Image (cartoon, rainbow, N blue to C red; front, top):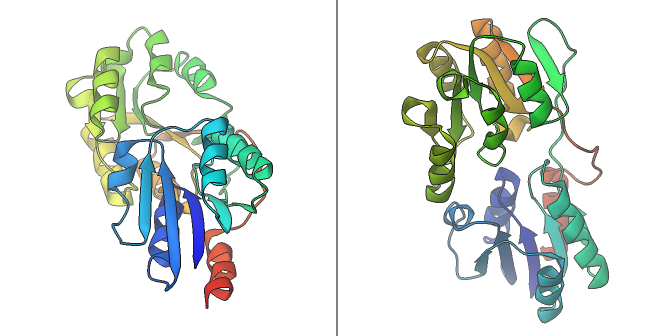
Length: 254
């Protein structure tokens, strides 16, 4: 029986798990950083889900406790430290490592699209502008917005409906209609509706790729004539697309 270790928390991770649980003589151990990530995954007799943050040592212990046939890193494109830890643990445990990459979609800078290198750079850019901001980069880096003197009335944060994330964002000052709690990815129509509803002038996003709803944000920004501010990816990754990994696994377990 094949046993695969999948670091999930993304659409690719969930789809890979859904692909594998249907295969005979296959076991999957999935790791998510949070309990919220766990509830988004399917349930199956051959699937075990661990929902807690693991450091490199924890990963090594897990990999050495079970005879895994492969480690599949389907974490977010911006979770570079986590991927580095998974790779290091895989090497130490002498297990084959496969990074599932999400192809990036890029555009040239123009009057409607602005690229920045980090959340801090984005806030610096916004400090020289006026107009409402729809932030779609999640809750982890919202504190950077507190440097803007009018962030509480200017920024609308769209985050996951995770109780801890909601509480932390609320304490930072993102409250009432300025805190939008939803599970994506989102359609172009919904993005456009939010832009109109809150009179948005700028949409902040990460370059999350097609599966992350990135193109829908681009299309909404273009349709409404607002400025799209994109935080570029921290590194250029090498690896395999989800479809390539599925093909490799198909031949292993057929």
